[in-house]
Amino acid sequence: MQKAQAIHILVKTQKEAAALKQQLDKGADFGKLARKHSQCPSGKRGGDLGEFRRGEMVKPFDDVVFKRELLKVHGPVKTPFGYHLIKTLYRTGR
Image 1: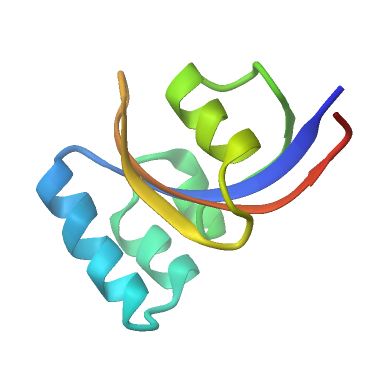
Image 2: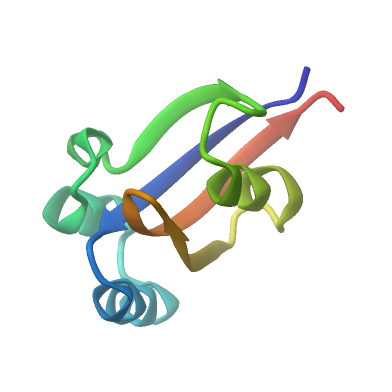
């Protein structure tokens, strides 16, 4: 079973997510931005979701974590919760 660890920032609008992505692309600290802006309880932990299995997250989120490049910020990714910026720290298994 595939597992991964990711950090993310969840906001309400695509515009807000895009603005945060620009800051990250310029070298802003992901954890600090997550603590300040994320609407997910994980924001208090710098956006850290811990380790989870494939299929535990909503599909658009899962697809980024398990198919896209590691250690790169992806997004904005739209889910029923809002817009995410996602950085996958590692993946294991197949």
